[in-house]
Image 1 (cartoon, one colour):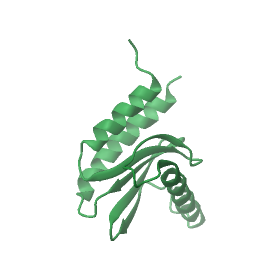
Image 2 (image 1 turned 60 degrees about the horizontal axis):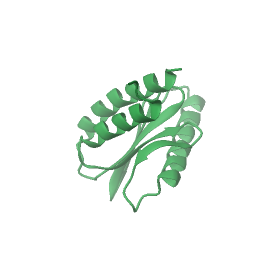
Image 3 (image 1 turned 45 degrees about the vertical axis):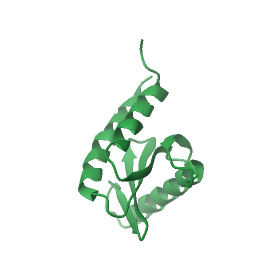
Image 4 (image 1 turned 30 degrees about the vertical axis):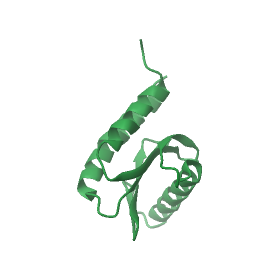
Length: 125
């Protein structure tokens, strides 16, 4: 039986969570709507989604004003974690909230793969 888009996106998120040191991750529309997420009880997935979309929008606006090209990723380091945003095609953003000591290189490599998967799933008719 063929999997639905939701099931395929669930698989992408579940696989990504296996990387480790990830507190939350999600797939957000460019408009800030939650598509899919795995978050702990202390993280409101809908608010996280809206904020991540806002951060991406601001970065894209700044990039456009400075003629620096498309945004490839955004990394925000805080004392309690790392927020990473990666475009997943034209429709979505792959987001992650990782532990402060997380292996950034591993997360970025894995996000590249997962963002490509999300883009392909969302392109399906």
